[in-house]
Figure 1 (cartoon, rainbow, N blue to C red):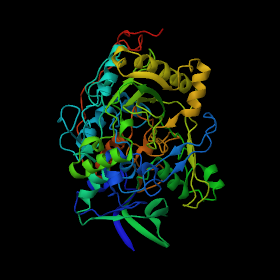
Figure 2 (figure 1 turned 90 degrees about the horizontal axis):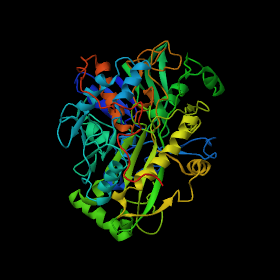
Figure 3 (figure 1 turned 135 degrees about the vertical axis):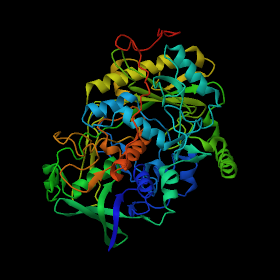
Figure 4 (figure 1 turned 135 degrees about the horizontal axis):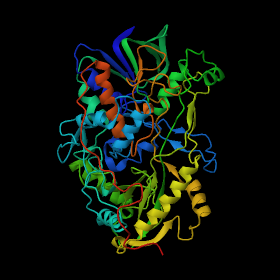
Length: 561
């Protein structure tokens, strides 16, 4: 029988952080269980190869939604990392903290102590920003962040200038004082290598004798004595084993894994558990509910100059890029290629940005295949504050049976309206003079797609997940029937059991989720250890002073015809 102080389920974006911070105390024994195995493959470590591990069953759980009723009944991919580092080892490495107002919204919804003033110091503690620390950025943390190849391709700067010409402001650091506007995009890369939480947090902690890492495991359920969690049962190959926790069990299995494990252990909505044949331990209606995600489309354009990544997709070019990366850790292999971006508001009356752009100097799909034969570029765009809500529900107690996942994308009318705005506003931006030297015909949706009905149909047929599932075990007040954990990440109705990952977000943040997930684990680690919390920050945040009456700060140089 193996006994530790803490047992962590999931060595992903949150679990690796917890393993590192908790084992900093040499008197604390920690075991972390991970379903996958090693992350040392060059396909994971080389940033430009990001689409490959994301599509490999070896590294990806390969979850899939039920037919989405508002997306032409398409089943949507929901990749989740299954290796050391979890999704931080297969994601796009984009580093976005979210807007300050996102965290203030968390606090308003019952997550007391999780406002921006409380969270910012933990973002800073986690980070080493390549340009140094300040009132917003960190300079001594495990997580290294940078701007890739510093926008050497002229298309990156052209996109930013086009945004300025369209009447939007600029931001030199969307993770700092001002998120809203156009500017460079940041990524979790160190010296040309993907800087996952496995590299940043877990690998240094693995040198400590008080950390045990158990890989290739399938956790069946949480073990209890009365209301107290005392361990977990897991399978490794054909062998079943139990591992026990003297202090706490911590779930960091992600927004799909954590609610399903709670449900298999008897914590969740009574009707879901009984239908699955699971005895009810704690009837908690919110477990698996409130599921949120970002949905996006790509607007693609032909490029009139041969400067895009479409020219680098041949076997010889790929071999040269790979060889240079292996030898020097630089060049096109050392970046995710998302090096410029924007955050804007969809309309007047929206206080902080609700639309996000990722610009890519290629017309390409997520599986790495070219969208057409020739040179092109694209911009990924979608609403960042969706109103639609989905759920995650087990079908049975069998841990090998995939859960029922339904996002209900585009269920809410506001999401439909915002997506139309995404297309309209993007076309206006891409039509600005700064892109005249590069912009050819629109590849998709195509210039004939102009009416609302046509745009809506194209979105339903082509929208893809941005792979940001979250909020399925939301944090909130104990008297909130939909809350799953309290403001110290403790599962309501159970003892010695916490959830620490993106599932506990009350609402989805305004951007990619790896950064706020790491921050959440950093702050939770102090709570779990009983350490003094970092002092709250008074750093200000930019909000357009006329946000109630205008959608952007200026008029476009080239208005729509």
